[in-house]
Length: 296
Image 1 (tube, rainbow, N blue to C red):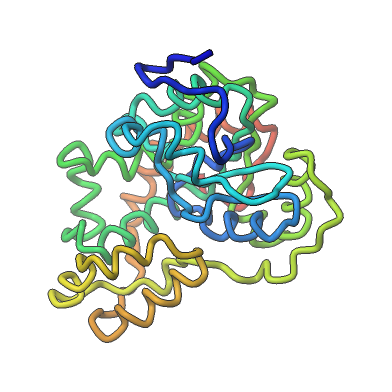
Image 2 (image 1 turned 60 degrees about the horizontal axis):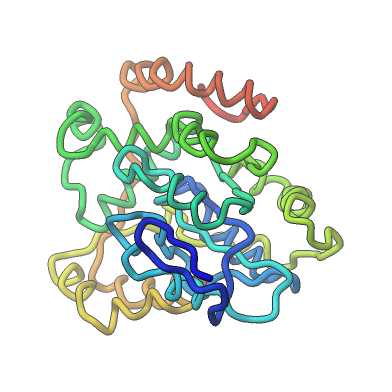
């Protein structure tokens, strides 16, 4: 017997596994650290490469289900992956549908943070990688041009969540904030373990390790940008997140410059607060969380 999913034939038995849960985002909310934490649990096996981006039709969907299954090895009770691009709607518009067609019973974890802080971190990430060359103020002033609106869209968490609620039951979705994971790591991880139905007694020792923090971001020089495109450097992405993080830090440091966190003008910040207000209200209602640490 074979099952047809969007013209992909899936034999019943393949080497590897399909994930039981997926961390769907959000970008710049600590998904790399959470991927690392969960992989330390003896009952959980995370994909070796963190961001598989399989359910993005324009990215890795064409690699096929066999490729995807092969990413989940080991003897874990459950398997998972983390791809923050899964909540990058409308840039990637088919993600939730493709995911549901492939793993309809998967549990979803959505990591969110103060929407304005996330937006700033997103900007710093792009500026460091030379994807972005404008000031934050100019980038936001042109937010409807050249894809800048995605700085805003990725911080509209309920807007992103709605795409998944078309297919997945709310009981299969867990919302966790970056702030609670940072302030109460063990308690928050136990909440996640309970949601995933694995042992809650596991004590995470290295939870203080936070990877890819924006305060450590540096903007590559022209030479650093050239080095980043070498095949050997690209292969670093197949390493485990902690090792990948430190190797890149060593490689790029001599060919980069420090970045100061941009400060939003008061009027612009107030505009953003008003912009996100309705979305955050919907998220509060859905989660019954107050998000008191947020400025919105």
